[in-house]
Amino acid sequence: MKLLLIGAGNMGGAMLKGLSSYDITVVEAYEKRAQELQELYPAITVANEIPLIDDFIVILAIKPQSLEHLELKGFAKGLISILAGVTLSKLKSKIDAKAYVRAMPNMAAMVQKSATSLCGDEELKAEALEVLSSIGECFWLESENELDIATAIAGSAPAWVALVAEALSDGAVKLGLKRELSYKYVAQLFFGVGEVLKTEHPALLKDKVTSPNGTTIAGIAKLEEGGVRDSFIKATEAAYKKAKKLS
Image (cartoon, rainbow, N blue to C red; front, top):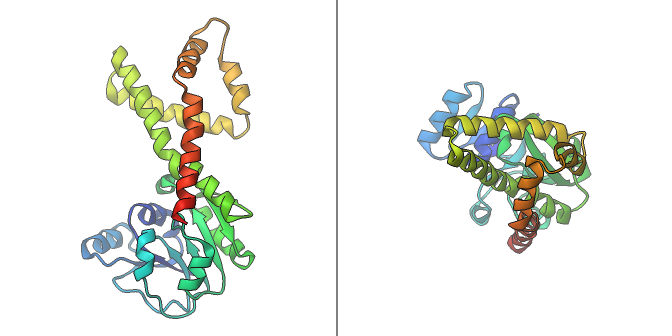
């Protein structure tokens, strides 16, 4: 399987650690960035121009607004697009390929722990799942609407979780804990809770930690007072609506 990654910016670059195990060509027009990629991944091919796409499964990782100016020559074996809000129908009108898949990874791809949502043509499903499993866990969805919903969780929520992490660290620092130590605690906290949530219902985990008249319920009461649960629900809705607007 030959891959062609077009775009190696924040997300494309994050994905490359996992994708570098494949026979992959990366298109990077900026010479300095191209040199960095070649040094990081000596086994990959870095090109400054897009080759004929006939032999490749193309992974499109450019900015959505750049699609209008993109010119690809040939007929790809498959196209995997991570462009937020760009529909399958728009991709099909712009790029020639045998099959199309939309995917939404997140920045955890840089440590191969992405939660990646996919939907599209069944003919490309197996290859897309195999390739993107190299950057984390994949979830095949039945429609683009489901993908837009998942984008709010997998695509946007890492920034919200980072905001929570920063706030928890700030709280600890306010009480006297060193900043560098507080960040390490929070990182391990998120890692551990994430593992538990794979098998434990969130409500049951909350109840197990919450003792009568204890420290946890005192904190939960303050979070509810601030409307934190409602804020996260509204944030998810806002991200979903924005994704639909972009499409």
